[in-house]
Amino acid sequence: MELRHLQEADRHVAETEGRIAHQEALVATLDRDGHDTIEATKLLHVLRDLLEQLTIHRGLILEALAEPEGG
Image 1 (cartoon, rainbow, N blue to C red):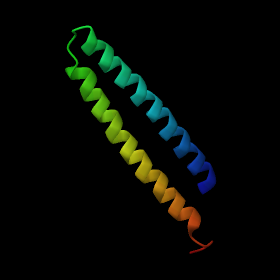
Image 2 (cartoon, rainbow, N blue to C red; image 1 turned 90 degrees about the horizontal axis):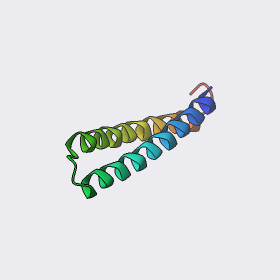
Image 3 (cartoon, rainbow, N blue to C red; image 1 turned 45 degrees about the vertical axis):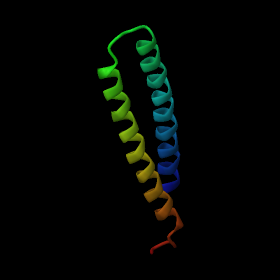
Image 4 (cartoon, helix red, strand yellow; image 1 turned 120 degrees about the horizontal axis):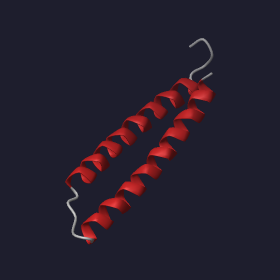
């Protein structure tokens, strides 16, 4: 079951990395065009915080997979 969880965690990390890249590009475009970037930047920080939590969760899954069965 943990292997399926690891696959899901990997997918969530990859999707969030993609969202971060998109948001970074959006912030740069807004800034370049002279628009307010406060809210877009706040969302970028939330996405980065989410990625950190997802990465921690993925690490916990890896630890569980490394444990011997029944351990």
